[in-house]
Amino acid sequence: MDAGLYIVGTPIGNLEDMSYRAVRTLTEVDLILAEDTRKTGILLQRYEISKPMLSCHEFNERSRVERVLHEIDSGRAVALVSDAGMPLISDPGSRLVQAVREAGFFTTSIPGPTALTTALALSGWGQDGFIFLGFPPNKSAGRRRLLESLQEESRTVVLYESTHRISKLLADIAELLGDRPVFMARELTKKFETLQQGTAAELTLFLESHSSKGEFVIVLGPL
Ligand code: SAM
Image (cartoon, rainbow, N blue to C red; front, side, top):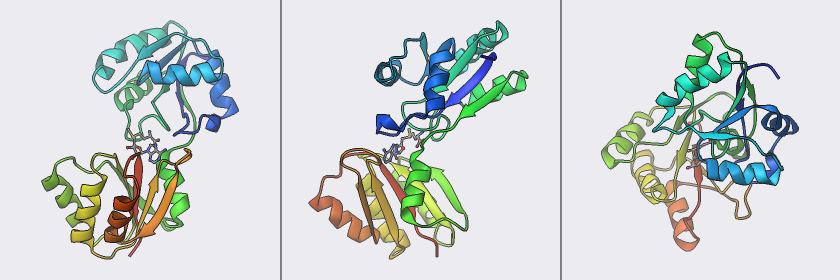
């Protein structure tokens, strides 16, 4: 296997969503950089892959760059995976990928699932373009500023949100974007996958009568 950096997509919930190429790549590389080595360990165990791992997350990515450049320069193949989905999509890796490419080393990706495209396809929107904004700001003022800036945005908008802030996000959407249609995808590919479309106020009522636990993608329909 050629020395370089292999950016490998992994499942967003359902462990069967690993591609053959992802399994083969993780089997053949010399080292796996993982956001959380314990979580990636579960995936590797499922596919009977035994490989040295090194953590690479938002708090140590900067210090990992030199180490990875050295590994690749010494002829080794290094894989980068995140806890779920595609690395760098609202996940760490940006600094590392840029450094490896700037150093002139081989870089490639083994594409896999991502919550962004899975939810977008299920929404039925976005064929004429969309914008992806990742997580809205945690703090209320920043989140509201972002939503205000979307009042004139006619394209489909995709946002990520966690269990802790989904209710606040929906309340702010209801207040600032009114009746704009919203598609909510929860726990994609998992046992309790939930897909629901309505206004933000309707989705709030839905979550009040069901559980609001899980990982969410919110898609704002086009105007
Ligand atoms: N790299 C990932 C990807 O490719 O989608 C995203 C990682 S980001 C840290 C985690 C967020 O992605 C979650 O809070 C949620 O908004 C979204 N997400 C990830 N997996 C999901 C799933 N199975 N169902 C719904 N949303 C999911």
